[in-house]
Length: 425
Image (cartoon, rainbow, N blue to C red; front, side, top):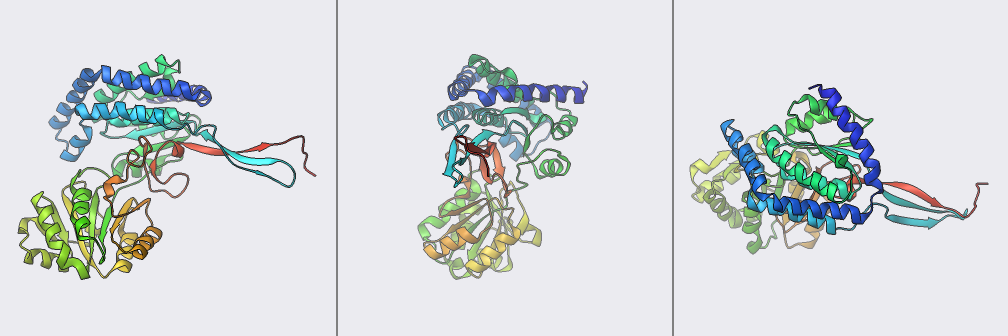
């Protein structure tokens, strides 16, 4: 296969389709999404078989547990994809929304209209559900999409793509509105990120190495986050009933996600009260704690098994483990917690557990991350949980889109002017 020719063909088709999709009615887009959901449910057995083939090949290749977890669909995953399509269909259509209209002294009225970005290239690893989520969000926001999944999910992605094409056809929209790259050749990624004549923005979802490469080599704007070193800080005025459930959920509900807590900060004044019980719960779930000297001594004194404890190194404060490991540090109150987070965090998601309103508001204002939470698990940093229906990814950038990227993040705004014959003097 001539990769450059193939990718440029996809690009030309996507660019042409994007004009049609941008002008498509809300009813047509919603009809396509509903039809995709019907197809996914109807083809459940075929999707499970395709996913089983991917899982078998992944295990044979020795892929790590976190990657296997992301790759797995299952009955619940298939239903979640279908439900996600329906939820996006139920969301308000942002395209064409007019806001901020103001009359100027000259007589003209100036405002903004929300418009699609155009063609969005999405590069992702392992998670086959991204194929459905990306198709839904890009289409509802009036964009065409070129999707390049990881080789480990090839069969699953192709099966989901067939459902997407069927849904587009049922609604009378062009099949090229969503295209899944059929080759696993890595050269296809290099072409996709270097086609500004066909692609308007790239969204990478995957490991840090992939995103670093794309950010370095892309000739197209990139919406991205590199990693998710998320923190939970236990304040000296935390509610004892909230502390352990929040930490346990933030760390152990799923290990392989970017919104999983990787670092735990505890105010020294309440460490004796909270840390031993946190340690017992985490150790009971097989979590290894990499601790500062003070927290290590406290947890040892509390009888936490030695094989669950290690002394932390400087590197641990920055690490995204994606595994049953958490860094633990005692801090001298809110100021040190904020300073530590702003120094070591990846800017993804941070949480404070406190009943002090002033401390909570300082944490929200001063922590420089895309999502900042009070008395809630970091696992809520997700487009579905935020009411976006689904997400195309998480952005830790500060321009255009930040945090979970849903429909609005896949659009832009242009200035519009209403006049009545006015001319500039």
